[in-house]
Image 1 (cartoon, rainbow, N blue to C red):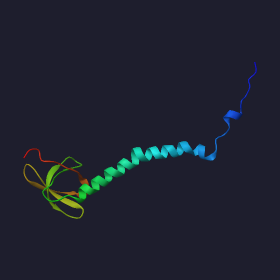
Image 2 (image 1 turned 90 degrees about the vertical axis):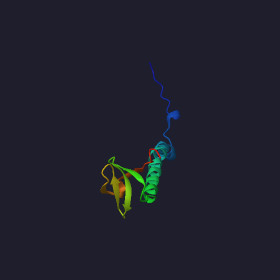
Image 3 (image 1 turned 120 degrees about the vertical axis):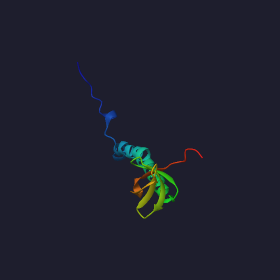
Image 4 (image 1 turned 60 degrees about the horizontal axis):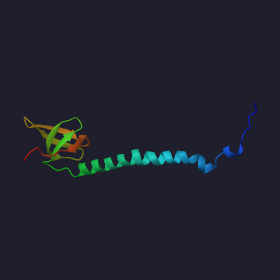
Length: 102
């Protein structure tokens, strides 16, 4: 039994062709992971920049309150039911919440 080797069809790819899968992976990572994260970060920064006293917010720890004052890096919240005043870092604000019913 003899085996015949066909070397010609299996020649080594050129330099660009060998890097093509690597470049494709980088492009996929950019569009599926990096770009959406940048968009979320930009929306969050815009939300923090548009905060004003009277807005209802939720912190990353789950505390819900109404903004009383805004400082450079801190926000003072009024938290129900006893109208407790707390100060949280501005970066701890996760979202601006809507009123339940008016």
